[in-house]
Length: 292
Picture 1 (cartoon, one colour):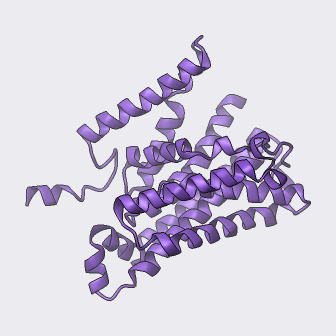
Picture 2 (spheres, helix red, strand yellow):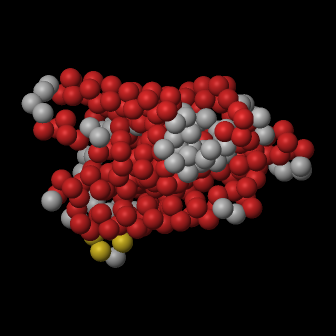
Picture 3 (spheres, rainbow, N blue to C red):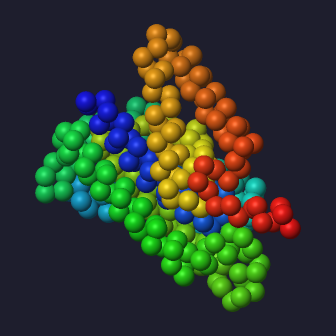
């Protein structure tokens, strides 16, 4: 039973990551390849504060705020870029954060990581899998609810207009930079929350958990489920978290299992891009253009 609870907790954490990235990529059209950096910033912020004696509630909020601040800082120079250039810039940001986490040994302990992170606690301590699962599920539902309200509001319609035609949105008098910045900051802040939850669930973090590979996994979840679809993000997370789990019960070396897992991800994405380019439940916004 503990194994199932563990999987459900991981799914909840990745749902927060995928939904927050979908707000940036799927609804605003910003190709962000540095999402794992915000995940790591939230994890380290919360872990370091709680180890310094700060209550978890304050550290949890701080992970949201600090990750959002970094989203704002990276947005200032990068949001004027588009397409591939923005992707390269955010990729560079992710690598910078990883390098800082790895080399600022006096603060982060570098490759040794941070052990002994306290368990999460809001009035009660979430010291069992069942308790933490309830906590993770509540945060995941709240995240989906907030992002859903945003994307179905006039604000969300502006984001979609920027995604479809940024120049047209600007011609209509919309402050495109402001809207893109808000979307990036909100997405980064929620990734910081996911990082805090991950740190206090695993109780150990190190820089290897927040690399480009992690970002690619989150992007794959969003693309698989469908860009611009919150339900798609949830479906993508469930599939890519559960898909490799049967390999745990196969008597193979871990290196081979890891390679098979990556092959499965690649095969699924290739087939999906051929059969259903918009994702499993993504918006069919390209069909009309083709027919025209």
